Amino acid sequence: MKLQQLRYIWEVAQNELNVTATAGSLFTSQPGISKQIRLLEDELGIDIFIRSGKHFTELTPGGQQVVTLAGEILAKVNDIRQIANDVLNKEVGELSIATTHTQARYALPPVIQAFMRQYPEIKLTINQGTPSQIAEQVSRGLVDLAIATEGTDLFENLVTLPCYQWNRSVLVPHDHPLANQPKLTLEALAEYPIITYTFGFTGRSQLDRAFDRAGLHPQIALTAVDADVIKTYVRLGLGIGIVAHMAHDPVMDADLIAIEAGHLFAPSITKVVLRRDMFLREFLYDFIRLFAPHLSRDIIDQAMHIREKKDWEDLFKNVALPLH
Image 1 (cartoon, one colour):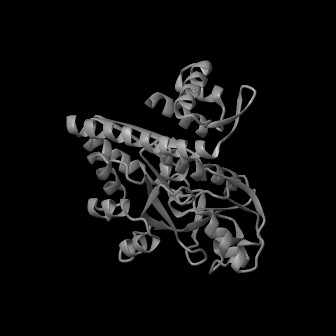
Image 2 (cartoon, rainbow, N blue to C red; image 1 turned 90 degrees about the horizontal axis):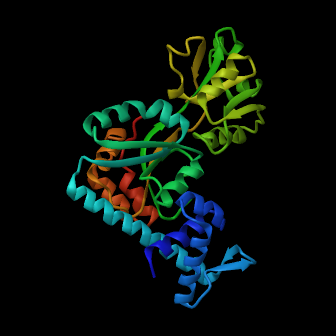
Image 3 (cartoon, helix red, strand yellow; image 1 turned 60 degrees about the vertical axis):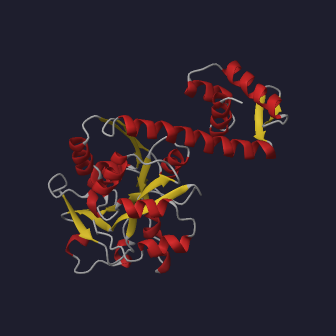
């Protein structure tokens, strides 16, 4: 049994059993992958994949267990490399982050700037995607951490650390009727076409819940994953925008009025997401502290070993999250 063989079965499983796609992502040949998988199956005496001709169609029951363990072994191998790197030089390495556009554009820039000043020799990579995509990247060990609001509970091997809470603003042009309304209401919002985040992005679920509880059915005219796109269409007069409060820049967006809507919607919580039991290098702790100062090394270490939801809630029940 070779690590390479475990890598192949794990990656094939992650690529929806597509050997061609796996070969491309690993820069190797399709026949080479198929041969190594067959050699592993012969050694184990069981089939890992069910085949239809030359194609894999699904995992066998035993294969599912083997692939799960293969993922855990590969993650531990990566941790061993990280431990060695940390011993050799604590200030040299790579940090990969998966996040959404809103976090990358509005929340992360000052943190990234401060981190790069502290660790100029760390290579930093930011991957943007949907909440489910970035959670999967952390779960598979493709990135070191994720920063997101939605989709952080999709995988059992992930640990979530609450960082800050935030709410929404309604964006309208200066001459819009809502600009002069004394107190914003859900009923008033429901009278206009709404442009907001795509479902599953940036706290969208809280917005939907608020309207549902009020028995209102607003007209969602357009959705986007990018707050800048939302603002563009608000400027074109296609509707009112509902975005994260941090997404309004008083200077860059001076042509739009941001009306505070925190009294209408429950706050959302942005979280750092880590793979459970992964080895955390010193600079990773420092990055998290820069992003969320209340997340000390001790709290992070405790959270990484918690298995029960109640224990997690107890750990964070007295933590006052800042409001952005």
